[in-house]
Length: 87
Image 1 (tube, rainbow, N blue to C red):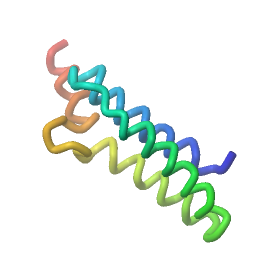
Image 2 (image 1 turned 30 degrees about the vertical axis):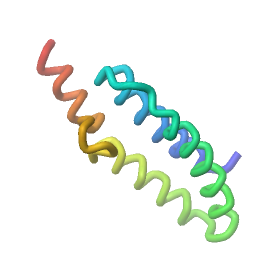
Image 3 (image 1 turned 90 degrees about the vertical axis):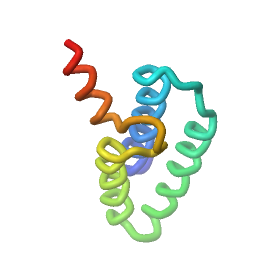
């Protein structure tokens, strides 16, 4: 398994959990399919360009936590702040 696979799978899991669990939206089946395709592409990119692909995967993970993937769904960081505010 490539070193970039973990961050890419985390991106998919965080995106789905944020959408379905924390914001009560419908399951978007494009996310798991795109996550699997991205993991395969990053695995190939890692063989071609080395550790740069791993760094880009981690950068994408940080970006997904703080930026909105879907404009109608808050980012995971916004969802966490809202959850802590309610407690």
